[in-house]
Image 1: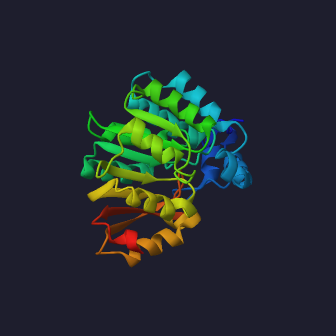
Image 2: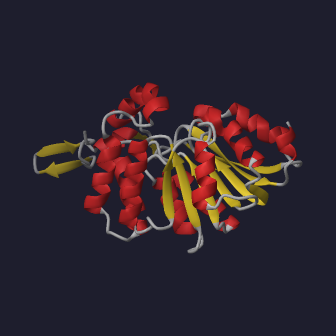
Image 3: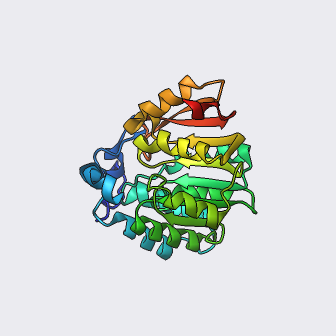
Length: 285
C-alpha cells in the first residue's frame, strides 16, 4: 500500500473564497523534524516486528515492492540514482528498516577511511547499505553480504544488478552461527583467510553482534587496523556489544560512537559504532 500523495499546505485566496490546502507530508513533521509515526507504513512496520526474527521482512510486501520500484524508476547502472530511489521510496511510500541516508553518510565515511579490499556485511535486508559501500569502496574491492532471509537476498541481488554492481557485491544466504556452514563457504568461495578481512558492517540481530564478531576473531580473519561498524547500538539497542567494546577499549579495540537518528526520521536518536581492531586479546575474554 502506498502512502498518501504529496499535497502542499497553504492558504490560497480565490477572490471571496479562501481555500486551505493540507500537505500530508507536514503531518509527519514537527518543527522541521521528520516524524514517521503518523505514517501507516511506519505503524505497519512496528506491528510486523514480531515476525522479524524469522523472516526479516515487515510482512506486507514492501520489500518486493521496493525492488519493483527501483527497476521501474531508477536509471540502470546509476548507483547514485538507485540509492536516491530507495530513499524516495522509504520517505514517500513505505518506511524501510535499512540504515537510510543519515546513517549511510556515517558508513560512507568509515569505508572511505578504511579503503578496504575485502568487506563483510551481516544483514543485507534489501541491499541498500551494501550499495553505499560498493559506491565508496575501491574499484577492485569485493563485498560479501550474509543474509538470513533468502527472499531478502534475492531482492538485494536485483537491486545490485540494476545498479551495476552485481559483480562486486555478493549475497550469501546463511548465518555465521549456523554451525560453521556459512563460515566455511566464506573461506572456500570468497577467500576469507587469516588477516584478509578489512571491513565489517554489522546490521542484523543485535544479540548476535558479540558472538559473530568473536567468530571472526577466532577465525583470525581480522588484522590490526580492520574496521567494524555496527548499527542500532541505542535503538533497538545492543548493550552487550557496547559493553564488550568498552571493556576492551585501548587493548583490543579503539571505538568511536557516532550520534545519529533512527532511519528516515529525526526524532528518535540512535548510535553507530566504528571500531578499529588492535589485536587478538579480546578473543581471550
